[in-house]
Image 1 (cartoon, rainbow, N blue to C red):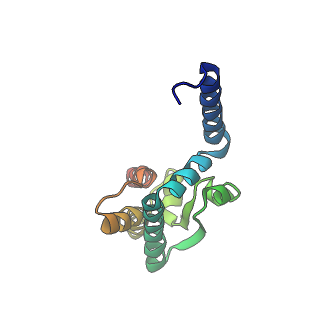
Image 2: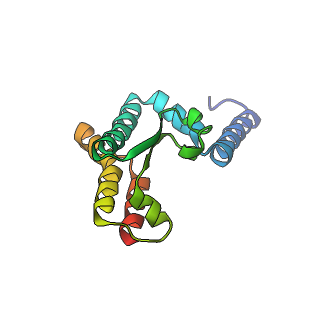
Image 3: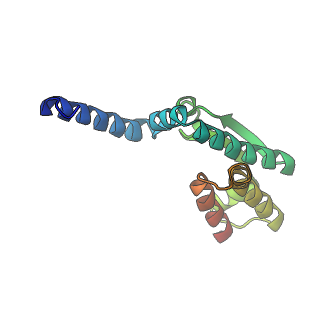
Length: 145
């Protein structure tokens, strides 16, 4: 491949860069997520375990599950998911935190458990968690409210 003309390599590189920019800018990274999960069965399994952790903790704690979507491309069409696959849970404490007000301790506890349920489920299955950055961010916002 190193003997290919420089123009061909530059064109291919530019095309890949253009697709990446369009994916991030217009699709929220859905194409890249779809490709990475297709290439890595472990990434797909981690994602499924992580989201199942959110779903099951929400169900067990009585929080309403509003949406569940595993496909990054399908998630683009679902307003509740804001373009990202996963589980959308209605928790009163999260609503209160988003509005800048406090919530009863029991509601904060339930929302905290649901937020960390994904990381816990992934870590139990794989001995580490790679997902959950947005869950940690949401937990910090919840606890700071």
